[in-house]
Length: 405
Image 1 (cartoon, rainbow, N blue to C red):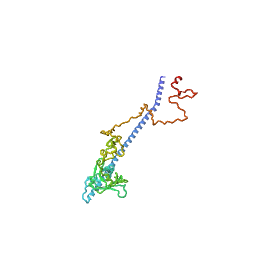
Image 2 (image 1 turned 90 degrees about the vertical axis):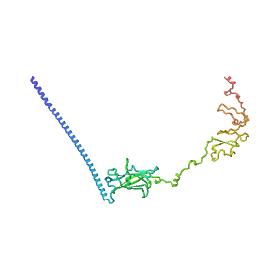
Image 3 (image 1 turned 90 degrees about the horizontal axis):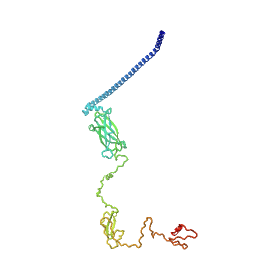
Image 4 (image 1 turned 180 degrees about the horizontal axis):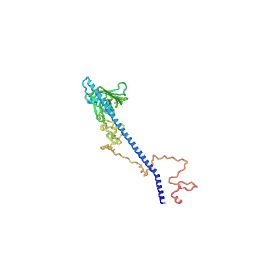
């Protein structure tokens, strides 16, 4: 029995081993496959990056080669130009040229164009009358790359006013030889070039002018440029404006007479200020404002006779002498007069403001009673009662009130 159990267990273990063997094989093969795939992916990604790096290097080298080729080509063109300049100078019949130095020859060979700096050019107001009297211009020669080239030559500048009607539109023409143009060279922080200050030959009437500049170098080459410049036209040249005649200008420029030479007017006083004048009829009060119209007459020169239409003084007919007016602006005091007493003294005023004293003039007229009218009861007495009627309250008296109570 023991031997049979041992053999059975051995058979079971062999059977289990056979079943588990394929599982391990599958797992092992999957691991190897995944490792192979991962290794192949890393290799392919690394190759792509290496190829991209080589491509970038090739592009950089090609770009550098093109830049070197362009630089060599420009140097070759410059050498050809220098050769042409030297050949023209050698074959010139007027003797040696003033621009035969190597630096000047190189500058002449580099120049390829001419330009006007519009931002730094424009009209120039010299007297502050809001109108431009001159043209401020900056002209700069440059090479093929736009860089400034300092080179001298004959400069010719013309300005045209396109708002003018007719053929004569030119407002100025200025010519400078090589030596004069070299004196106008300006090197600044904002701009550099030939700087010119050109007064107008004819004042422009428009707000824009067309400027044409031409540079002729010593080797005979010519460079031209055009640019529109903003200016402020003058009053005389502006269209639609009327120029004042010379007479009006002379009158406007004439000097006014000083204030001290003008006639002075006497001081004007208020009506409250009173001036006293002594006359035969007595002191008369005259307002200062009434004497302002007399420019040459003073208060002391007034005649003692009373003025025409003046009212006589209330005390002029009496024999009493007039009282002298006190010094200053005080009103004169009239002499005393006898006053007769009033035979009917006025009643004392009522204390109540709303009650007014009866006036005889304002009392209504009395009306005569008619012949057939019945006599009225006197004031303060009770009216008689009709027969058959009882006593009413409007007929009560002090004697009847206690009885009624």
